[in-house]
Image (cartoon, rainbow, N blue to C red):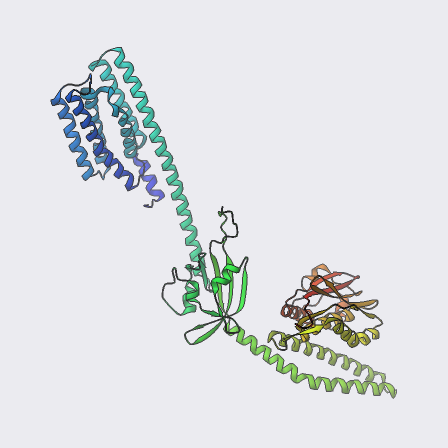
Length: 554
């Protein structure tokens, strides 16, 4: 289908004609060739006497009208009109041949009289409604001449009027149908131009993004991509209609092959995977791949889950991952090396504080040693949090093992009951009946519950804290609740952020790094669970998570 611009449409309307495709104009040429041939055949029946026609004036006139018409039909078929003036001449000749044929050969009894409706249509194609009006006027003049001059009697007049009206109706119906086609064509072209404009805008936007972006069809064939993709692949070759898996050969963190198309088909929403790698030349790249299915709003199929394709955003995170690993390694080494001097310092200061307090020495020195001891403990807690975070990030000590949850609860109670008693609060556990086991990293689950318990002790001045483990079907719910100061709704949205501490003055009164709950969230992610928080100011808080149970021999 040939395209059309708005300016072309306006120009054609201004000139008085409708816009038609080349195929339509070819149909007009064919009609102009076939119609005189049919009418010549009909005239031959009249000349032979097999068909009676009141208007018939003899063989010479018949041949004088039909033969030139046929020759003209052949001419206009071979050399169709290109200019407006040539179209006007052709249209005039069509009417000039049709008029004497009706007046001197067939009259209005010709079976092909409705073919005059084709003249209306051709006039409309060439000159719009002006051409149709002129054709109608010509037809009425022929009717008047036939009724008043050639065959001047009442029956002829009535028949001519009926034929004229019926022909006019047929012609107008054909013109109306073609006008509808024009409107539809114009609407399609407007929609097409709008879609092209939107596509151009989208491609401009995509090509100006630094991240590689790829759009594929539902079979994983690449349809759209930006320059950043070629930069990532270090190539200038076209990727059009190539399979995404043939362009990117990905592996997971274990070295196993990953098929991108399988990931795409499994996705039901925006999904991110930062564990994938690929090799470009001699360089191994680590990638962060975000992908999502495209679901058209025009999808009318019964299965609404059918995807219209996929969008993939790829980021090269090789340097970022290397820096992250170096950072984690640095934190791990530093935190490990700091443990010994901190432990020695903490012990020495605590011993000195005890000695000075027993011998009745200066209370100022005792207070100073107590303050120093508290700060060393704070430093020890920070180092411990950093060490735990580093281990979680580097997947150290993440080997799963079967853990008896009741035994774990009693171990934690034995570890922190004395610390709670020093603050005058009770540490309770509710995990006495057989609850089965979970298969996870012992270090991670211990650190996670420990974090909740130490926070509960820190922010509870009176009352109690409770570690509860309950079974709900095939899962175990772990919850640590307290009667402490609670957390406001606004703070609940931020407490898992790194280094975040509430502005509540009661929180500021206690020392903290702002890393505890951030580390807890990391540990929960490694365990495959989500932390839930329920809290009210001045009514305490409850932190909980769920894990699936397992058999003791798993």
